[in-house]
Image 1 (tube, rainbow over the protein chains, first blue to last red):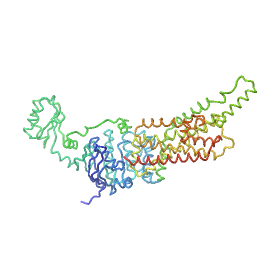
Image 2 (tube, each protein chain N blue to C red; image 1 turned 60 degrees about the horizontal axis):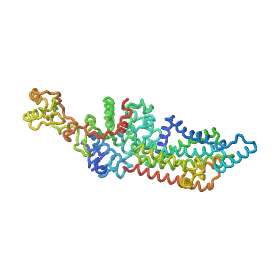
Image 3 (tube, chains in turn yellow, green; image 1 turned 90 degrees about the vertical axis):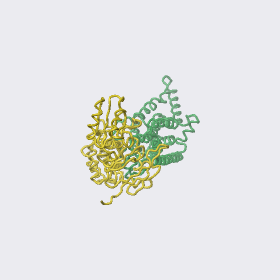
Image 4 (spheres, rainbow over the protein chains, first blue to last red; image 1 turned 180 degrees about the vertical axis):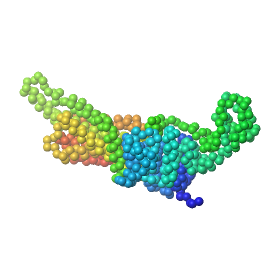
Length: 332
Length: 278
């Protein structure tokens, strides 16, 4: 294997707001050409991490290096190397998509024809050239997200940060953005992605770091992470809770330590669901079952296994203004 | 640095031009002031005798004119007020120029700018320049409208007079756009920002010679008005456009310049500090 060039190196990066620790001594490295995801629920510290890596938030402790440049001591050099697509929709909706991208090209030092060529390239790359000269307020939610990415890749950065690039989008627009992120990777761009959608992390990433309460609790390729939960999960939902303990006892007699109660459901962990299902059905035939669900290993289950809660829980306070900002135009 | 400031200033102006509605709306307030106070508060006609014998009548209007000349330096209050409104309007526009930063912060645009290599001072300066271009444009429109409504320039007015009046307005604007940008960089809430704007706006307008001469004010208000750059700018603009005498013309320039440069430096320092912190 050829030696890989490290693009990002994060060392004990920490951010505290008073007593609250938003990011807690995280460490990871990202190699050139990799798509690396931070997967975790809202409020886990993903956006704060991006904020620090993009030099707008000052770490309380620790440091990170982008191609060897410190995000604390060499902010200016770092800013030239990164492209950030924030969670907010930041493009000016009174200007055209092209004007928005061109402003970014010029802020990164391109002039005249070169700035125009770069802008055209970025818009074409993100499938937006057809609408480049329309006012952004006429864009759909998916187009606005793509424009945000176009604005952050126009200067051909060494690494692109994508903070929740598909939040609030329909399935079709989401898949479109996923395709474009894969193209970015083919193009040799290093990508740091944050998401709370496990499908997104699983689809796109070479490696995933699962983050919760500011700490990285697991890291590896999607397959490595899925290997942490051996076998399948079976969820059983009963009508009423009366016989739950009885059923759990019966199953544990056959498969020791396999079964417990999670959120009012019975959760059975088994090496192979196909082998165990006939036995399970025999047990359950005496009871009223509403739902029986077999889940193959996925990152959502890994998160559940590690934290005891689902990715979508823990949504935290609802900031109406922030919601509007994220979904501006996304409902059309 | 120059390219960044230029790019961001052009952005401000493009946004401004794309909102044609605001152009008219922005001019409504000063026009109301001119119409309502300038035209309705017509002191000369208030004291126009209707049923006196002609020889007393002309004597009385001579007396009224003399009084107005003493008070305002012109017999035409509309002209007095309009020249003051030019300064006040520049002041209001500069305040709003700084204020809209709160929205850009809220929308995340500022954050995106901060993640680019753009110098922080460039972000601040583009705000100042964008606002100044807007003000110069509005002021030109406003003086043309005032002229149409009966504004009387002093006899023998030169291009230099007009340029000097423009510079005085720009100095006021630079000072206030800097300070309000600095406040906006430190305030996240739009409502708080507007509360601050209202708290400062009207008192600063009234505690100046923009609408009435200082000598008509109670002495405590005169003292406050002496620290108000709007007072000096209004005096300079009037001196140049309508020929009102100013007690110490050179000193007025010096004070205006010192206050504006001080506000600019403080504003820039506080703004850059706010961008670097977090």
